[in-house]
Image 1 (cartoon, rainbow, N blue to C red):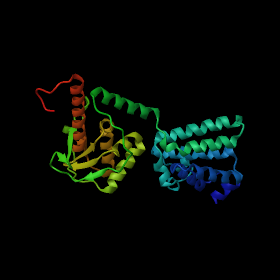
Image 2 (image 1 turned 45 degrees about the vertical axis):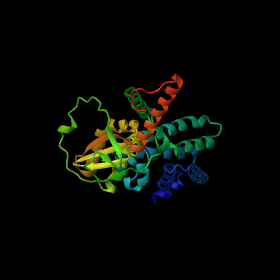
Image 3 (image 1 turned 90 degrees about the vertical axis):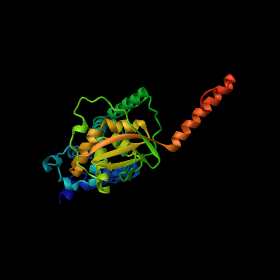
Image 4 (image 1 turned 180 degrees about the horizontal axis):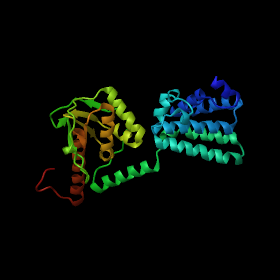
Length: 310
């Protein structure tokens, strides 16, 4: 078979490479290095291993760009693990290839090529946590916008699955008072003029597909969408509720992309809206903080409130 021929020639088989990259996607560096050690001990050279690794990530990059021709990939698309195809973003795959190419160029001058390879594998095992400079820049720009507009920035909680609530006519949902996110200037055609389908709900499968598609195109956007407190469907509109002004602004900036992804998955035109919500408990904490500040002022100046509410 082809796999046996490749093994005799000292090449890494596709099945072994599928397993290695799956361990990388799981961020399990110990299993990655152990399996690599077995392959190297079986007679595959370090240079050949790095070449096959580069070819595999090149194929993943091509598939993420919509290229699935077997003569370019080397194998049929169906032979690549589905989990590996969904594990990395396009920018992360480009970063992986850059690391492998740098390793291949430098390994000939290395004191210990084996150590260099193990370092590369350790770095690739953390590839899913890597964020590109452009994504960091987008976050900083959104943060600057929040600071300039006076929005309070809260520390983000660990990502969690969004809670899907049924549509309710009342503007108050679960004792949460909503306030719209400030609209950014937009010279394009207003969403209000667009024709949106009157969809009343999304299936759990659709929601997971939407999150997965966003994650593949823009990791930071997916992380922000996952911070949504609720997804509310009503009259062909999907409204995301956020407790954090920063995450809300990130999602609002790319709501056109989210609408396109939803249309590709559901086949329906659904308007996306974003709102910042504040719980009643948060309002009480704010009132208590104001009262404490008033007490400090009274104590410092030894005064009393003549007209107002203490």
